[in-house]
View (spheres, rainbow, N blue to C red):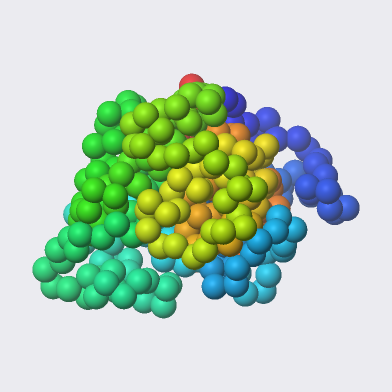
Length: 295
């Protein structure tokens, strides 16, 4: 798997089918966007479809209402934790309280305000939606699984909550290491017991909004497995008609790791909607953890 260096970017490129041509200066700026943006862009794309079920592949990726949600806030918090080594719970509470209107679930919102935060035995998909940086950060699969469990355990200490986080992080790790989709599928099925034999066409007619790990993580992985590139992965995940921002984040993070790129216009549109603080944290995370692995 090859991630293009800034110096390898073409001097002129068709903006993903758009007629506008970008200058070398603009292209270099976009190419400097950090890797690891796949989950964040998926969250932003899915944000407007979370409570507006989309049962088709043909929909607008970005609208004037597209925005980052709690998935992005906590993904960035995880990256910050991996960068600094500070208290994970403290970092999560700090980010959550500085971005209070990001759409947190009721129990998690209460946890954010607690003076002595304790895990609350959740199997919700919050543990999976924000674990993406863990999949990039470690040199072995075992280290990745241990960190994902630790990351989930502060809130989602139910076995299903931990399993969802570990499965998601493992998919990112295996994808960035160049494993095939079949290898990823077999590992997830044998290790976590998820049924990945279904297709999106089979799932879509009967699938409904679901906030559990067990009801979103397998479906998000299936969307990735059926995809042909980053954009199709996001469209498949959101077209199932479920918890769109979270499924976009899970699927998008895996897809970026596997395909090695995100379309430039998606990167640019996602970046427009992020606070500068988030951009800088993810750039630092990219430099420290991902860029060093390009070899």
